[in-house]
Amino acid sequence: MNASLPKQVKIVEVGPRDGLQNEKESIPADVKIELVNRLTAAGFVNIEAASFVSPKWVPQMATSAEVMVGITRKPGVIYSVLTPNMKGFEAALAAGADEVVIFSSASEAFAQKNINCSIAESIERFREVAEAAKANKIRLRGSISCAFGCPYQGEVAVASVADVVVRLRDLGCDEIDIADTIGVGTARQVQTVMQRVAQDFPIHALSGHFHDTYGQALANIYASLEVGMSIFHSSVAGLGGCPYAKGATGNVSTEDVLFLMQGLGIQTGIDLNAVVDAGQFISAHLGRKAASRAGNALAAKRLG
Image (cartoon, rainbow, N blue to C red; front, side, top):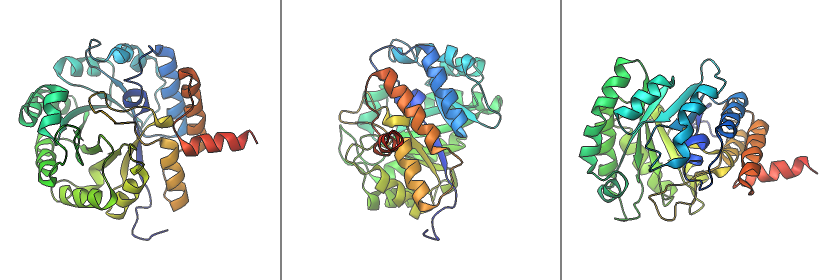
């Protein structure tokens, strides 16, 4: 193993929320609960379980309160929920969320399309949520979309990413996600961005959220490891994408990321075989093959 790489990483499993939110067919709450429970049993220490957004905009997340009540929680595991406003925060608080996630963009054009306001306005909207999270001793995570490219404006300046990191830091975020929403980032670009934003926020509290649109997600994760990053997001069976980003074909699959980490000798504390099972479970329910090369290969190997 490269001696400069982290010896251990945290994988944030986003499948139950980010992965399922755009599925057109309604998924029963008991299926979502089973998925979260399987992921908990597999050893994840952070699972993005639900989203308290308007069902008008994201119908799939209408059962979030039911899911949060129904899951079997494991001590020490952070169950995160997306909260776009105070109404969402109050629902998250009532549901016993361990972490709330607020979000903005490094692209002004994307902010306008996604949340109908400027970047500065989006941050200001979350000030009340941030203060409420701190008052209630709930972890606060900030997420930055389009950190490496935007479907509407194209290139995104590194300075723009750094500016949003500072704004989220000043709101009191415990962790900040740097997201490649449309999957256009490449390894050297990723290192440049991560090294720049690490000047304003601790590298150990920054996370990489990569989409695999151009097949670069694993290369970008490795590039991030090389500059000291140790938190990554992934989605079981490669579920998900972004409803506001044309061409965002999906999150990097958890099985592929775990296979990479296993090969590098980096500890995750997660049972890869159990994640493969979880991926096959949710894919069978959705009636399609999992979008994970490693997961499908390992499942096929078991069958001989």
